[in-house]
Image (cartoon, rainbow, N blue to C red; front, side, top):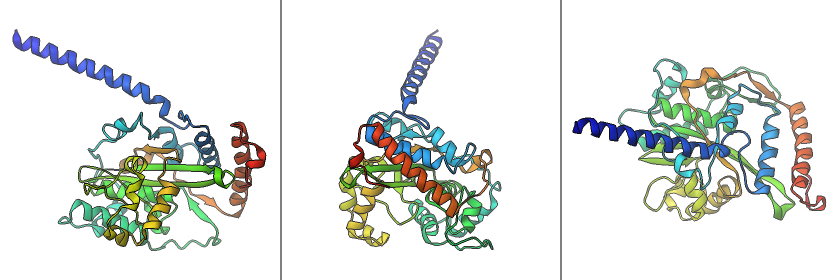
Length: 326
């Protein structure tokens, strides 16, 4: 009898916890997806411009499109969920399903390496270890967008969003959780509301917590307790970037001022920042057709940005005479 009562109590507690979890997740829905709630009008205007511009290139079914559909804004309302339950730490990669990426991981890391050494080996390669191998003749000003990770390995790294996804994949194959971050552009009122920033990067789970690592250059920060700083740490404690040990600046090949400049451009509270789960085993769900970004597309994008820039700013009441031409 006592056992039955105990089991009933446990069932009721589990049901109550599940109901609370569902209620909590429902409360976060407004911060999820392509058009999340953004309270600050200037941030919302810059975000709108960014999303509309990327929509010129990335269509439905691409990884970039899905990233925006599934992203969650990082703010004080979502931070607890994003840093506890959002990203599963159990990985489901099936060995042999992406052999080219596996070969690269096996080339970069060794079993006796520490978790930190494995992550740094992957990052070092993704920052400076690429060899351009595809015999493709394209104009020098043409970029290839929307490349699957196997192609990114051979295309000299791709853009920041491509390289971020590659870092996620290599880390996950190595048994280390990683996820995709987007920091959107912001408008600078002191410079005529010109657009600044806009980046894609990664957070990697190592040594018991999430740390932010730049996708294009050696940039990471250590907290005073020696653990890697997360994106949220940089937002809430921006002074971390300028109080690093000299060994960190040296390891990253940057000065303290370089760290501060990078923080202010890509990792400050002026930006809308989002987190998305991206999994190496889900590659089959996306359309990986290459998108060639050449002179014609660049001209189209420039004209569109000029129109959108003035439109989104005037819609929130910024006088035209204060808006500098993009």
